[in-house]
Image 1: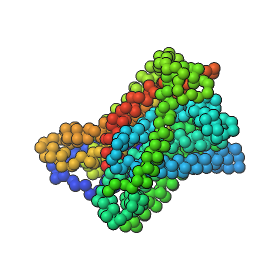
Image 2: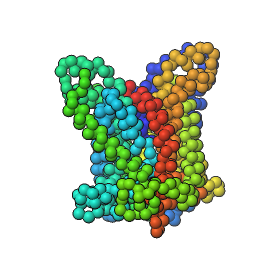
Image 3: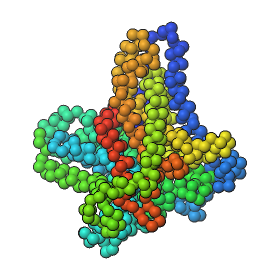
Image 4: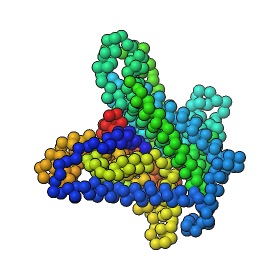
Length: 328
Length: 279
């Protein structure tokens, strides 16, 4: 899904005008219309699956859309800004729960993205030069990423079971670190359970991207630095990390959007109602809409989420592009 | 220059720990799938008390796994084919032509990728219900309807990836074909597509993989007959029993095709990501 944004940015830069136009030919009119003809199916589908639903979503957020109006949502009475007021009234239950869910999501996203990046970068640097077993490790590290989400997460659900799970068996029975077996999928521990699964599933993507980025750093840079007497750590600090900066900027943005919007992991881990400590925003909106059947409020929450994501992405892009301009 | 000894040791320790972290769930999945039920309902054991392939036989009858498999195959396959075919045309247009509205198109496609799926789920759900009520066409609960929802993520992604791949095919190649009398579509299918085949295959595998693992739309937009694997695996936990050994066996069975495909083709994927992200 979001995994594609890196290509995206590069293509966006390329798409700026300046590409050479061929010499004029007899078939010029056909050729001028051609790009539009080629785009037609994609544009129609984009309208159908993205733009129309988005407009409807925005309209829905201004309607009093409960289960009574689902069969014919057009007839639902207008609610004005009520759905938004309910969503941001942080003293009332609905707003308070949304705010809580927002903070949980932010904390979860920051920790998960940070850990994914750290593990991915460290592993990519460790596998930079050739040694025996490198190819095997590389393939192995990509397995969590390739596994279908539900199959991977369901395995973690099994491992986190209270009575017959591996985690309690190791922590309590074998290492004796806890007094009694803990609950991992309910209560406060659920946050760490979710974080563990998310990092396990997500870090290989960082690994993949950083590995691709490392391939583009010229070897001569390292050789020159080695001649000048720079050690391993200095080489990583002075060459590897600065050279990876453009890659990292895209990577962190992609990981952020991906983690922040993640629905699959918490949904398979906890089911329709996540424990309070791990109530990510996607599942929260799902629950508001499809469990309590309040589509109007659910839509208003979706629109607020979208505005937040747009704002963060915008600020991030401005900040990183400024960094790029002033960087040597 | 050989790296210092201290680095070699810390690297060895780090990679071992990381491999352990990655592998333990995989080991649990494989070993539990070969255990008798008594082994997975009691205290966790690292080794099976006896190795049995019974779970692999039972998974097909406890839930209609074969039907879920076929549903997943049809939905993920159709979504992949649709989005890759349509993306080939639009990526070619973006990569090789200049035209008005190109920026609007590319920015729109890029931005729809960052939107959460939940944003499209609610409206699409209502649209399907209303179309069903008005015309009798059952999009809600049908495979066709689910395929359409999968295009919300697979189409923009395929377009982006293919623009990157097509850009890496030298322009001279298809310009030569145009000079030799090929039409633009001839140049696309005789030159650009063959040259970008590894990329197209990688995009297809990746789109398929994402659709194969999708849970959100599948859990809302399917019914008993169109259920996909993502939802169907929940059937192994009943009120009385949770057949963990069968769940692990089924997870393994549904994972093997995509993991194998991914590992075989990840080289191309890395190449594509490099082309896009690093240039």
